[in-house]
Image (cartoon, rainbow, N blue to C red; front, side, top):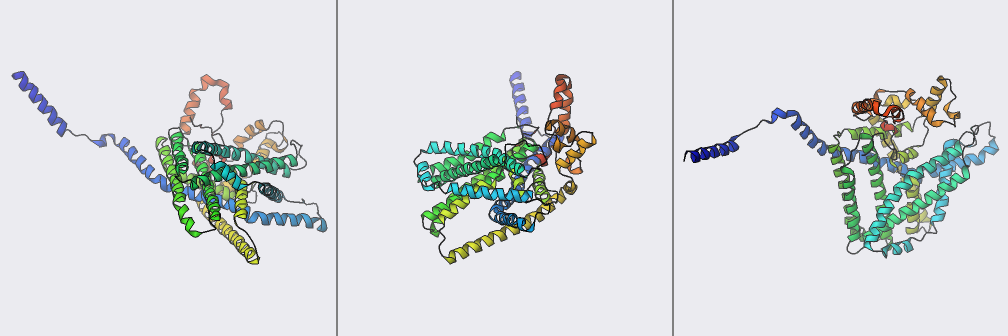
Length: 502
């Protein structure tokens, strides 16, 4: 009985202790504060991400409208200069300035590719794709997305090679195959990329017009598969910047594809406004799923990798710096090309496809129609100018807040490299074609540094230094070939960052 009584009292005491015991969270204040900050960071991600996405969207829109509005006018001015200079005399000046040469090349590429696109039958392509099974179309759409990224990465290199080959100073040693082969490669690339985007738009159109919407549902679920492939990987700040640029480009491209789908469907229903409300729910569903996937993906990537939501402000400042620096007198690239490199967004194929769809969907007959087209063109120019003014003012604010004004006055990279090489007693970089990599390595440490360099570098530099010091005895000379940590301003959509995704 005594043992039973002791057991009973012990059991009562245990239950009483379980019911009344307490604990103090303040004993581990740092841990719980960190968890609370993570929650607040996740709650801030949608707002900060959408700020970046909105700013990036208008950047892409500015580069996209440039193809329709200012590029034709610049081509006309360049051709007028080309025709009038022989009458007025050259006077020792260039026949065309480098920027004008690039504009003329872009104009010729658009004209040739449009003439080639006129032989592509959109209706036959639509019925050919519609006859395929749902699973086959789902696989085709995924393959087209991968091919679009590969085309974008290699296509900008093709265009840059053409522009440099056409404007390279004549006194340099010839190290290229000629302007005409580069021009033909650029025409072939833009035409093939436009065909690829047309197949994407046609597949999306088939999904919209399917009776049970099963294909559209499967294509939307593909966005959620993207979460699985991204969230559970290690990301540094540079990698997240690349992903953000890719998401901006993908979202803008999807908007244009949806516009093309709506135009084709409205044409089939004789521009009946009631049919637009039939398409509206599907359009909203596609856009909502894209936004939801981006928010969830970025929220968990920043949570798992302990990245602050303030990093999106740095990304906005980097994109704004591209816009402001392109307005400088010493700018070495056009802004639309800068957007193409940074985000992987090349406006020429997408603009070509939109022109092809609009001209085939809208019939222009009579003087009134031509007046409407002229008014629409003037409206697009007005939109482009207003968008550029607002973007430039907003970008100046972002650059000033990030304290990056002094970087605007840095000389171009080629000038800095040439000066650094000359100071060391070597030949300038512009004339050294035999060892470009060695020259770039020796001139890299002499680049001017500013306070914004520390603002735009990844936050874990001390950890990397520890790893480098710990591995010195194991790797020896292998550390010399280690790639330096890249500044955000040096990261474009297709740069392999020093901090890889594991």
